[in-house]
Amino acid sequence: MAPTLNRFIVGNDTNTYEWDTENDALVRKYNCVYYNCTAFFTNTAKDLAILVHRHNGVSVFRGSPAKLYAQFCFHDPEYLIDLASYHDLHNTLALGFARPDHEKVILLDVTTSRERMIYSSTRPGETIANMCFHEDGSRLLITTQYECYECDLECGTLATVVRSGPNERLAAGHYRGDEIEVAVVEHSGQEQPSVKPHCTYYRRGADGTYLRSWYYLMPELDEKLFRYFLYATGDLGFGGSNDEEGFQQYWVTKGFFLEQLPELKRFFQPKCYTWHGNRRLKLDKEFQPLNEIFVWHKAAITNRYSVGDSGFSHMYLADDMSEAIITDNRRYLLYQKPLRGLTYQQMKDAFQNCFADVHQDTYWDLAIPWYDGTLIGCFESYNLIHLSATCNELLDTIESRPGVSVLGCSFQSPSQRTGQQD
Image 1 (tube, rainbow, N blue to C red):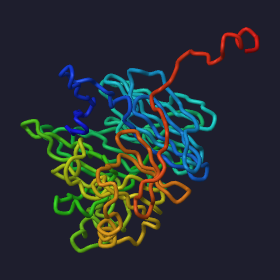
Image 2 (tube, rainbow, N blue to C red):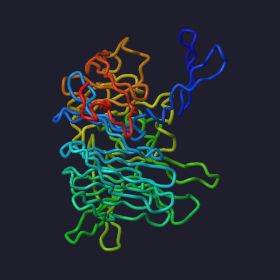
Image 3 (tube, rainbow, N blue to C red):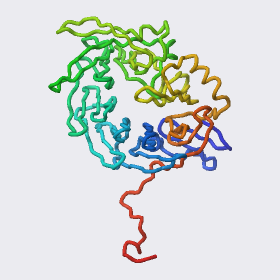
Image 4 (tube, rainbow, N blue to C red):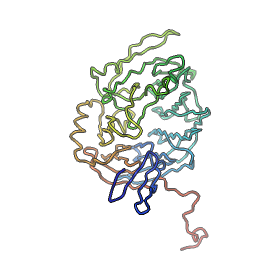
């Protein structure tokens, strides 16, 4: 609750209300479901900023300062866009639509406005964990808790990379060079076989089949080391198995470390294995700074309501890891290019010295770098504003009206429709 000029605003994770002092009642001001945003993408080569609204809409911005250029609306009132992935070369969005009993993936060509459905769930309770494009944009990886699919976007066919094994759930799938990485967690702590959280890598054979190559056991991330682990802002982690009392035992989260410190040795040298026939053999693999890795942890790194200390995370991360926007509990935005070579001390000093007395009441939900040297930040669910990349000074507000659309309406006057002049 926040008092302002004798007005009181109250809210939860779904709705925001204002207190009507005359009638002594709460009046709902807006429903956050309609205004929350799922993802924010930038394509500086095409002068595009793409904001994906959770309630079935996409807003496209251009220019400096940025202005609304186009909007896409999907008439699927029962669905919410919970996931989104973007390929800048093809200017294509993959949008994951979800409702309690069904999920689907729509491919949207932002240039031509052409859309097509490429995936529809068929199993009860099947949930899409994540999606990602191949670097050349020709394929899309779709991972549910039951199966990891690779979609050929030219012909629209789905091929199965791997299915979850006994007492397993799939947590995520990503392209790693010529390999596909699939993260796996245990389904239930009360069932057999026991499954340790791990990531398995697959290669596609000449005959189109997927062959397992190697895997690593996810190392445990202790709470005292959370401050070194950079993960995606708002990533709640993927839940592991429950214990006999029904309590969740752990989460798994993807992220990376900036530098090799002595206390971080086990994250750069996790236990790795390969196969020779059915024999499991130890494998020497060493991760490097900025290499993304899955870890498991018994306490939540962040929480649903973004309350309390969640440490450093990235709101934007280039696919090639060349640049990033790092945030400290969503208060300030540190733009770092190049990312490689940044140390923890340099990052800590930047947050302590660069943002003194700058909009301390603003908390950021999403952010991207813009081609004019500024950042575009999203706050209070959907509001956009330019800000300085060096000191976070607030600049130009970006006007937009999310969720406003008219279905089946002609904007011509009656005289224009009958061929008459006004």
